[in-house]
Amino acid sequence: RLAVLAVAVCLGGGALAQERLALVIGNSAYGSVSKLDNPVRDARLIAETLEGLGFDVTLAADAKQIEMKRAIAQFGRKLRSAGEDATGLFYYAGHG
Image 1: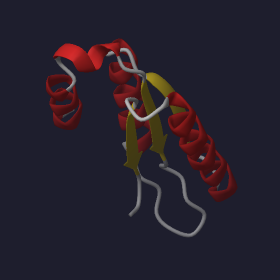
Image 2: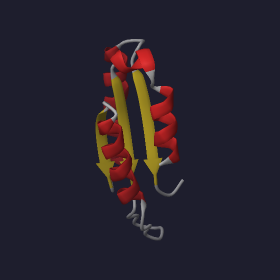
Image 3: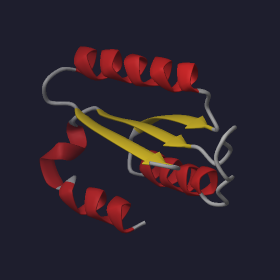
Image 4: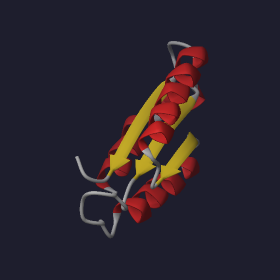
């Protein structure tokens, strides 16, 4: 939540006219490691908050590795096509 507040403060003024894209990933369930309680919930909260700030948000919850790779690649393409004045934000919650 603090990070989102920091983003909101940094995006004041002229930056509001720029395209803003965010990729938010939250993984709670893992095959070989213990399940985490909060990452998906946190990711959804961050995504909702960023949408309220005008971000075009892509949310991936409990994504498999191939799905995460696709989402990251697609985010990179969207960010490049948005131009050099666009703002990109990546948020990940889960096991490091």
